[in-house]
Image: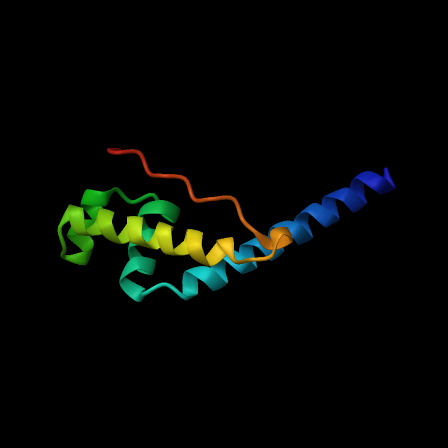
Length: 95
């Protein structure tokens, strides 16, 4: 039973390290990309709703999210292997 608890603790520590690495990379993104990414990927706001809130076209939102994902991929590729995170998933076309 002690081994299972130790494994759980180790997994949580690894998850926290990965999240810290991801958040540090996200904070390096340009603000407009960071906002679009947060809205559409993490908060699951649709591209059209994000566009309305931001006062830009849906195409601009899609471009910002795409650029943010590409930048994050580059930033995280340079992270040490034990600190790399799982890639972001893409948002469904429409909700």
